[in-house]
Image (cartoon, rainbow, N blue to C red; front, side, top):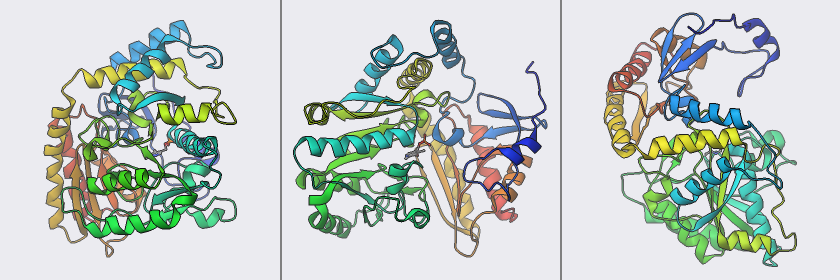
Length: 432
Ligand SMILES: *Cc1c(COP(=O)(O)O)cnc(C)c1O
């Protein structure tokens, strides 16, 4: 029996920031006592079927005994130890796994503490690499509109300028080169005009551009755009031709979510630098990694600085590494491709929403399902729709015009059906 404390919601409202919220016009937060498998338990007694996997991370659901046991074992040895001048088995074993499962040219692993930080590290690697080659003009990044790479400043500077409110920080934020967001959709024809347009941007800007950064195949927080693999393949070709490094941000897409272990595999390409995070620990601990090639790592190490100038206090945190090892093993020892296919089959039920007037588009890829409302319907009232979803016994958190699902991989058919029905009913009954 889990002991139920009374969660002090008044204190929470008065003193605690939640993601992207106002401190004065707060919207309700739901008090959670515990979570197990794909069920979230509220203090008020409701049991919610999880449709979010805690923002792409909890791929094996919650409270997984294998991950828990790996963490308990690690706690009994040490929860943390500094990584400067010290190493330990959890980090070494994890990095072996990461090198094994990521594209073959990626061999050098930098462990960091969150997705945003791994993006900062990736950007630093790219800048330091060109400096090490004696090239001082490459100080900008190139990236498509509608991207999302995190909330720290360098990461934010390559997010969609409108979504991340660049206007608030103009004069402080570095300005980069934005190219049109990918238009051709995954599963449809690739429009060659996009390739020509991209080439024009490379031609005009390559001498100042250190790296092109992109979320492979799925632009997530910037609009859940599932785009054509040829766009990514084209970016890879242009990067190589114009001496621009390619950074692929797999923080959301990694670990099977799109149907491939990493989304770059849809385009059969290898980036020069790759960021992973979110599902890396199965959602149990915060951990990320930036992985790069021998070429970049050697370049940086033989440059003027002689080292990569980054080293977080909690770098290589043993507890997070132990959780990540367990999570990766859990994923790889099951037929995860089949699991993702099965979830995708179930997510097809969302297409029923297409018959509703408020719906502009329904799309799925791997274990991701998206219902996009049209202009007339407008943005979702998050507080209103969440209250309805909680009543329906599901946990779904939409943003803008997007109501979407990325359930834990352990979700059974009935759970997915309940999630899809809840979305249909919410729209049909105008609870948004
Ligand atoms: C979530 C996310 C990040 C940021 O990760 P945090 O752990 O929240 O800092 C970066 N890039 C992508 C693609 C993400 O989805």
